[in-house]
Length: 111
Length: 115
Image (tube, rainbow over all chains, first blue to last red; front, side, top):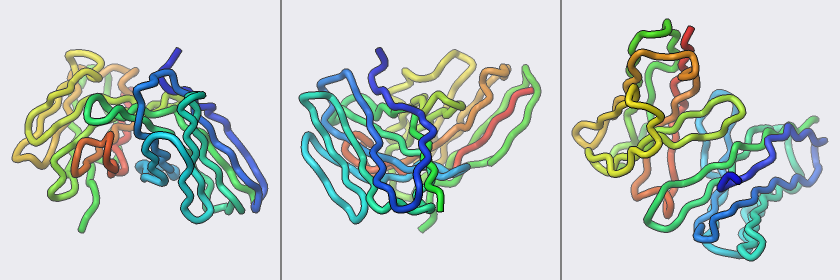
């Protein structure tokens, strides 16, 4: 089992839909959870950052971490065509080790 | 200020040739990372620099791959005797602190195609 599992999609939704993106992981030592967004032919950029369990909201985006289930989610409300990108989850263990990335989920929001 | 700059943006080479990829991180960022992104494979960690030293080279896939960083700034990733399986996008990222607790800033990548 890979340390981080993420469904690559592609996921296609109509404009205005609520999008749910998810990752599961196996390493219970992960403490830092991030979502990066990557537009085509660009580098990834940090979208959301969460430490330990709980929810974090930023505008139309909500990140959830459930450490008991080893499951993290990113919700996008009122999705827009400009949200069309690949979304990568990433996780880390404090000051040791490196960020481990999921494979990314390709999202397409149709007008 | 400028973001992370990578060159070349595209490189086509023949199997067996050596290639050098360059990364110029954000000024003041002490941590620098190289990742490889292949189609359908996500981001694969290659090497991490703190200043000029590389405490973690665990991701380098073979001894054909090497990297150095000079002056705590520019880094070069060298691939010797390239193989077709080396074809990928090579991404460089920098951060103020080790990325587990901080944000990684990525460049746009160097797309390598080995014929």
